[in-house]
Length: 173
Image 1 (cartoon, rainbow, N blue to C red):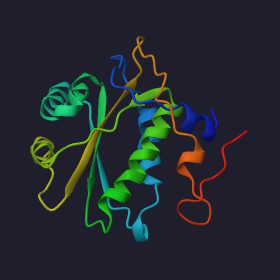
Image 2 (tube, helix red, strand yellow; image 1 turned 30 degrees about the horizontal axis):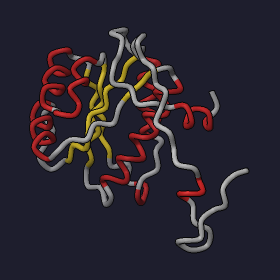
Image 3 (cartoon, one colour; image 1 turned 180 degrees about the horizontal axis):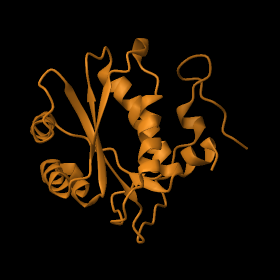
């Protein structure tokens, strides 16, 4: 699958088979994060790989919008250290992990955590106070009932402005 097709076809996945994620695939996902660009090339992330069933269940019970983490065979927490732009830098690494996972036949879902959930999960994962947990991404092979039709996207003519705001790109023919 080429990059364009991977970006175009990627879908959010919340239901996973219980099949193990291979070490080779996991390493490719971790390297995708490692190769992500970061502000001033600080590479401020730490990645915590979680496979322990009890820990995944605890995280799933803590994350209100991410209960499906408890059903995944694997999750990766992204933690930032001394980042100038923690959200921006984490987002770059997270997106690269998502795209790599999709290209390897896996699915994932970005989970938004509130401050209280971040603090609770940070304790579960023994993250030092001076570091910032951004989120926990579940990974797994898409379950057999995965439909993944995707959400319709706005056309470029509604999103792209030419030269200045308000001068929209003409609709495609």
